[in-house]
Amino acid sequence: MRLRRTVRLLLAAAATAALGLTGLAASPASASVLDIPPKGANDWSCKPDSAHPEPVVLVNGTFKLMAENWSALSPKLKEAGYCVFAFNYGNLETAPIPQAAAELRDFVEAVRGATGAKKVDLVGHSQGGMMPRYYVKFLGGADKVDDLVGIVPSNHGTKNPLAVAAGWTICPSCVDQQWGSDFMKKLNAGEEAPAGPDYTVVSTRYDEVVVPYTSALLNGPAERVTNVVLQDKCKLDPFMHDQATKDPVVAQWVLNALGRKGPADPAFQPTCISLG
Image (cartoon, rainbow, N blue to C red):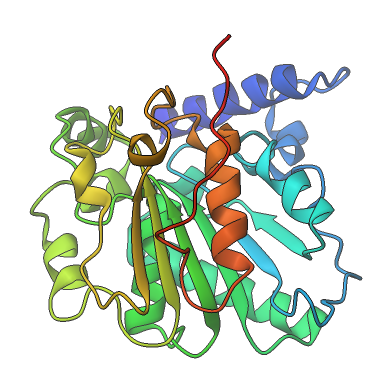
């Protein structure tokens, strides 16, 4: 418990520094810094229009705060015309993944209730790109989700040994995300992409967290599953796992997936970023 509390306070302090906030100490009294949404998100009066009928729910990766995780993508989605919502869950995303999926279910219901939308789109990073599949498959989300876009998701777990070490200390979700875990066996038994949502996976060959990077990719029919490897279309794209949500190329894939019927268009050619 003491280690978990220390991690929370360190993350709160980091978030305060990253957001340029002053007068907020990293203490339980100022833990509200953890709940600061990214720019463009959590306008609960927002109503979807006919061009963007599904609100977008952003789902964090492990150890991530929504303000940092979605600092680049949230305002882009808002500017594109979407109602955008974000939340922190599962004790900084370290709780067992079935528990986190139940929190997602409840948040989706709150968004649907506020916006009047029948369905939402989910855009998730890392654990947040994989965990919604549990919600879809086991917690009634199949008819509540239109698109699920996973950015470097841990769909089949990781062989990264750090997941084991983290799981021994403060991170049950890290245990769940290990390659071959009981959770992964349950999640991927049968259909990996059950009917209901359309699935888009965006991965990078330089993923240092989800190892191998191909663990992110989903099996499923082409009409509802598109797997994207960034470097297949933009060979010099340098983005790795942690900052993938800030990649302008990733943002283009997300908008392509959300803006059309079905998953992202495999033939889509994004504008590649310049390194010069």
